[in-house]
Image 1 (cartoon, one colour):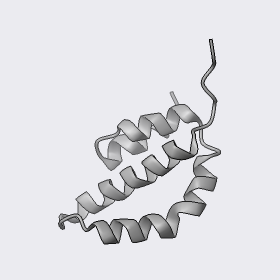
Image 2: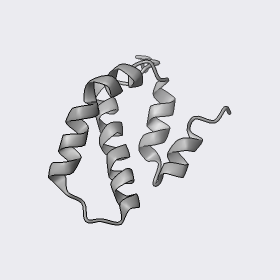
Image 3: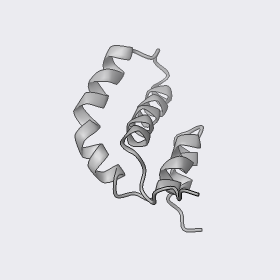
Image 4: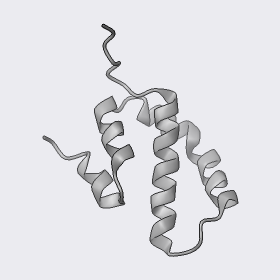
Length: 79
């Protein structure tokens, strides 16, 4: 039986960045502009991947499941 890696995959990091961008845009109350979201993703991708790749996979999975930024922030709290 294979053991899941301790760090997230590149795909998970990209999914998390998209998720965080979507949550931030939702806070503005403005309609979601795909071009703006893509521009933010492209600008932040490399730095985010580097940081995310050092984050425990369980924390990234928790953040991906967060329905708002408060829920995502709770993923950083010690358990």
